[in-house]
Image (cartoon, rainbow, N blue to C red):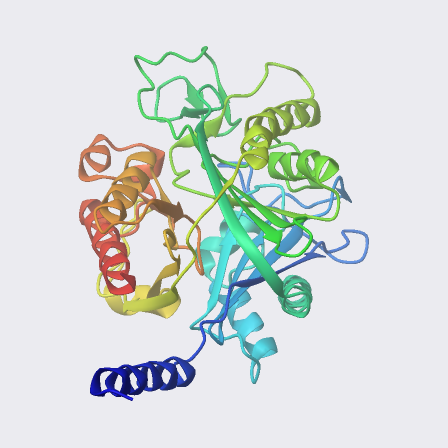
Length: 436
């Protein structure tokens, strides 16, 4: 055997050894779970998420169940879970109850991403602070326990159903579904516009719908379908006393009928100044059905044409930034030491699956802020940046400095003034950079 042949054999042997020693990358696994988080108004006092001067309604019935929808992602031995719950907010008390129930498991403060759909017709007494007690009724540990139990069940079911899966995505525009409510002819008490949509006075609307679909790698059947859109869950007005998921529940039901066996979840975006463009009908439940079906009609063509995306690597980060400024909302200006009794650390979240990144903040950001966050992430090369609002806690609204100076409902409920939007955008930009 010549020297060249010997050298070739040695090189081949070394390459085989290196390949054999290298860890094999595990493909993506996804599992989905769904569970009710609905308390029974016949068995306990349940107050709903408030409406301006119509605060803390006592629920008298259940129109449709409020739900927790969970997706567990696993790759290379790491797991992350995204949970969407039919509530007006995610409270610190709910998160604490969930962490307590998941102690000693694979799920903890570093990989739990929980967001609220923002239905105002769901239980509201889930935050144990004076401001929330006034708005949503006295805090109820019983209701928080029911919600946490349902959430953990959904996560456990999702974890138990993990299977090799492909992830696909489709995005489209659906103008005319949501409107910008920062106009003089929007009534914050009744949650209704008194004039037809006018693009000249309502220029900024969140028209993008994103559909994320996970399919069983073996059968091709959809495991979970996630619909992302940005608007309030307020088709049911202030006089409603029935618990409901509002229009997201209708939308999910419509898609589930087309894809039986799949879990359908809704996650909200920068909905702070966005309100549904509802039909002018006297029955709120009729309006809810109509709007939910309109969103489903916009989403279903996207569900059918999702394209597979790169999902490697999977990375995640949840940063908790200490509150360092006193609250200045509701016409109040509180010192830092009082503010920190209720609000201590703001969680900022990032979950990356290759070209897709979820960036979440515990606020109701107005639409333009969501667009800025997505733009910042796209500059790092993410093809599909998705901003998720109302995640892992609730710190009221956030407006831009320009909108803050104009005043109005959202500005008056921005906790830390005109500089807060820059803080949130910077935090999420840093996470996007970290995960890159």
